[in-house]
Each structure stands twice: as structure tokens, then as C-alpha cells.
Length: 502
Ligand code: AMP
Image (tube, rainbow, N blue to C red):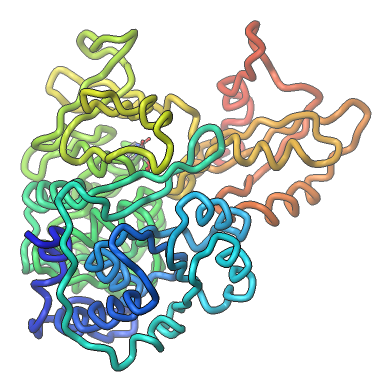
């Protein structure tokens, strides 16, 4: 095969008049129209100098054009590198410096702010807005609507997705054509996707869930997507009657449950609801079933590995568990260097064609997490019951997942620690009814100093994406420490635990 991902997901769209994307305003984009758009964009990117192996970094709103940029990039043999639109200029500066893309695609509204960043790292800046307008689509207008992809091997890079590190520095997870295709094939089969499916797609497409799990499966199986710009309850409730399946993060389901419009009648025709990216409380799973008669299917995965486990399609979908390892994926639970006995808790390791190639230009980090024999150390704590169901117990590294997005405490702490009057800080995740977890900061003030939480908020807002901002602050004289001098975050979580739920 010349270009595994393009040939499998995008090439079959050419010439097909069937609907592919249905947009929030009712517009329908046929498979063929989408292919032609992808072809034009590929020619435009090639004219801008994109060559096989080059990174194409994008920080743009979700749109049909944005999805087509993914296809165009892959078709050129280049590496798709999506970034959260919430990232600030300082954050983008790091990503462009690390990944050195040949093209950086940004929102037209941020062109002036981001141009110096792109220039600094030698990336050509192009624009694309949520409405599909920008210099990229201008350049693409009138270019050829046929396209022959450039050859790639299954093991070649197709995408880099950044996942933060506990040190506060993001790591670029390198994903190959085969990593992505093998996972999409397994999930499509397991979850019974066919061309008859209409997937309600309200997830962002800069993250593995919306980009790979949702879009790749749908493209692979020839189905349709109701392609919403984001998760908006009115749009979701309006779209549900026409859909057959939906994928979401737990927050989607808790928000739907909080709305009286979620009824058995509304979703009676739906064949599948999938949840993942963060733990779905057993309570939410049961409440959803009680209200709608549908059992959400929970799965577990991560940027580096694609999906690893899933509850069964037929059979018992157990609330609070993430089911069984996917076909072709090995999973073991390790403690003290060996697999645990019985149902003991340990660190989950996985191996299979889904597991990434390593971290971009970080061979040491790669060696730390990816063993030579292919086992990847996920950093998640889990256990497996006698029936083989896996449960995620916690995160070994204290990562916070707020609204489905990862927040690494250290990155926020570093900003807070630098503020006047702050001795040190501890950032923790606290249970939150809407976001799953909310970021919360405990500030130890310098002796005799005053700390102004408004000044902290302003400092954080200037440096970090909104989803990383603490939703609450507590100011104390000193942080609790154990005898080894480590801050006891567990104690802090206990003290402030009901801050957002009480
Ligand atoms: P990301 O790389 O952003 O996809 O985040 C991956 C992390 O999200 C995993 O390592 C888990 O800690 C967490 N995660 C993903 N799915 C689940 C799930 N179903 N239940 C609990 N945690 C999950």
C-alpha cells in the first residue's frame, strides 16, 4: 500500500456522493466534496513546501476544513500535529520550538500574536478560521481536486500528539500509520461500526479521542458524522434523533443527565454510547441507564497507546470498570517489578500494535516509559478482577483530568510559585460535579506576606490555557509534608475534598 492511512481512510471518499459530514447548521458535505477539499488543501500545503516527514502543526477550531487538513497532511507523507486552541503564545512557543514544523496553521484572529512565534522557529504561518476561511483555503482555491498520496510505510510517522509530562514539559507522542489504523480496525469491529452509522461527533479533534477514535473509526467504516464544533447541549439534543452512536468524555454524560431533555424516548433508537478519556463514575453510568435504558460502554486509552481496553459490546458493561484488553493488546499489572497476584493494584503496562513509537526527540523519556520488549508503562494504577475486568484505580503521577483535559500540577505550581508573597504551592484535583476534577491550588504564603488571589488568577491567565486555571485557592502558612520532605497531596485532597461538591 502506498500510503496506509490515506489509502484506507481518505482515498475511498473520492467520487462518492454519500453524505459524510452533517454540520450544526444543517449543511451536508458529501464524501466526494470532502475528498476534493482534502486534495486542494494537500496541493496548497505542498506548494507551501510541506514534504514527507515534515511536521504540520495546527492550532485551529474544529471544522470540516480542519479535518481535511489532517487528511491532506497524511497524504503528503507529513506528520499531523494538532494543538489545543486554548494554548497561549508561550505554550505554542514551546511546541513549535520542540517540533520545528515547516508549516504552522493558526486562527486568523491570532495571526498577529502568533506570527513572531512562528518566525522564531522557522515555521511558515498560514491561517484557517472556524468558518473555513483563511490564507490556507485562499491558496487552495482553484487547485486540483485529484490527489495521489506520497508513499509511506506502515511504521512511518503519521501524527505527533503532545501529552504533558509530570515535569511540566509536554512530550510529543509519535504515532505511526499502523498504530492508528490497527486501533481503528479493532475498535470498529468490536463496537460494530458500519456504513449505516451516524456518529454524533462533539469531541475536539486535537486529542486522540475525537481525532482518532471517533473520526478514524467513522472514516474507516464509511459512515456519517454529525460534526459539531463542540459540546453544546442544545446542539447535542437537536442532533441525537438523527444519530446512531455517540462518543464522549464523562462530562458530556453528566451534563446530559443534568438536563430534563435526556429521556428514554430521545435516545431509544441509539445503538451505542461510548465514554472515555477520564473515569466515568459508576454512579453516572447507573443514572444514565436508569434514565434512558442505555448502558454506556466505557473504554480506556491514552495518547501514547490509542485505546487499550473496552467493555464488551454484547455482554455485561460493568459500571466503574474499563472492561477487557482489546484483541491484539496485551495488558499486565505490575508491582515491584513483577505481575501482581490476583486482584492486587499495580501499574498498568500494555503492549501491541497500538503502542506509539516513542517521544519525539526524547530518547531518555522514551526509555523510561517504553521497555525494549515493547511494554509501555502507562503510569495508571489498575486492578483486574476474577472475571478479567480492568478497573483504573488512580494515576500514579497525580495528573489532574479536568473536563477530559490533562492538567499537570507542576506546570501550574511553577507559575504560582513565582508570584509575590508565595512561598510554595501544591496543585491538586478535587472532585467536581461538572468537570470530573477541578484544579485547586493550595498556597503557602511567605512569612508575614499577604497573597492576593486576584493577582494569582491574573498571573495564571497570562501564562496558561484556561482549562489549567485553578477553580479555587486556599492560602495557608505551610504545606503538610511527610518525613521524607514530600508534600502530602493526599492529605490536602482530604482537607479540601468537598470544596466543589458540598
Ligand atoms: P490522554 O493521553 O489525554 O488520553 O489521557 C490518558 C489518561 O486518561 C490515561 O492514562 C488515564 O489516566 C485516563 N483515562 C482514559 N480513559 C479512562 C477511563 N475510562 N477511566 C479512567 N481513566 C481514564
